Length: 572
Image (cartoon, rainbow, N blue to C red; front, side):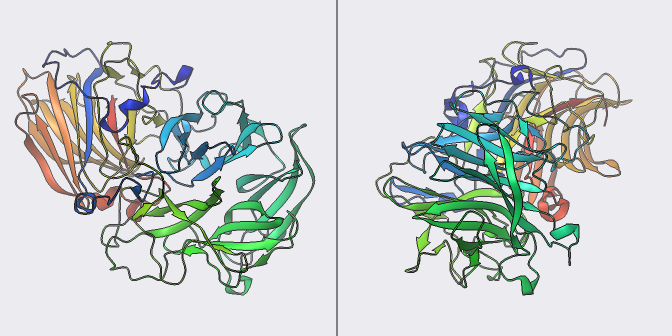
């Protein structure tokens, strides 16, 4: 999906249902050899929480502000009223979605930062949760340039830059001297620059599992090289005697002449948290706040209603009015058990103690699911709540929200082979392969939702299949597919695992049916799968009550949420 990333961008109005899918162009799509031709794709969120808790006024909004997996959020401003937010994409491409807002409430995706083959490499053979980790986005007023620095786990730490964040970003500049993960830029008021990141324990000798350090090095923006010594500013964490794990995702801020170092701790699961330090220079020494952590949801009653967990990995921004807000990642498990949404982007106001320590939650405070920002009017095109969208592929381009895996899929996925339709060639790769696969998908945003597609496809041999996929990673998938065997055509539901695929259900269908509608209904903890042979007027059940935990992070691990999409393959 390079070469201009083939699946280009629709107008922003396509997002969340503003662009209407034509009701149907009839059952007029004819199958073509070894190709699946998709006419439409729809998604409709149906979470009870949003239906039962309408927003009270026009200045209110829901948390998370970016629903569905948007891990490791980072935020910056140019000081002129523009806010930009970016998140991790791991092995999905294009890389690092970029969102823009003028008010911190109404966000619009304006593109991706990593869109070219020269910016993305070494994704092949990586796990879905490999690739691009934890971007950091900063604006440097000294040279009026935006920087994004991140880790490619297959290649190292690098940055790209631009003076037009709505346009193209530079080719990567790799920083071999910056080891570890989670690099972040800090541009000081005097024009000097620094990079802070997570790294190994001193001398590479950890005292326990999860023992890490935070290190700082000065950076020359003219030569684009690090200068001087990389110094350890945090060893272990804010209470080293407690053997804290994974001090990571660091950011430095100069606030009224005091340097603040903020880091995550505790890993990215239920023990996740955010802590704060003060120092007199970018190199410290940094003194932790006795009131740490400044953000966490650990230790709360897991049976509380609508729980938010795993809160941490935060970044802060100040508005022109002087207010401070933070973005951070967190999860929304169902009944405190599991979810398929992954780590989402939440936002919360930052409060300050009398002695100038920032915090987001204290004691047993829970992360609010409804907030407001005075003076802001919420628009109809939002990135939260019961999200709804529809695509009929007629414009010849796809929206920013679509992605594929690991690299250039332009010879597999096409909007030009059959204009007005999305065509996926049956490829000699299974969806379980660690390769560029014949797939294109989007994030899941809600626990409860319905997703449908209309497809023309005729399998030419028993291993050839195409349809709708729910993907967590290589080894945790459900495939609702049209295929064939010695008895003829069928609709089949398969569960993909590390040992191969397992057939859960199969419905024979009439050989005269070339096009089929497929549907998945998520009920949070279970999935129901359907098909229709009459344009969606009547739906036939394939299997209901299918375990949704199988595609959750609780079951599969990893850093992403579930995606739903389309695929066609020559391999089961």
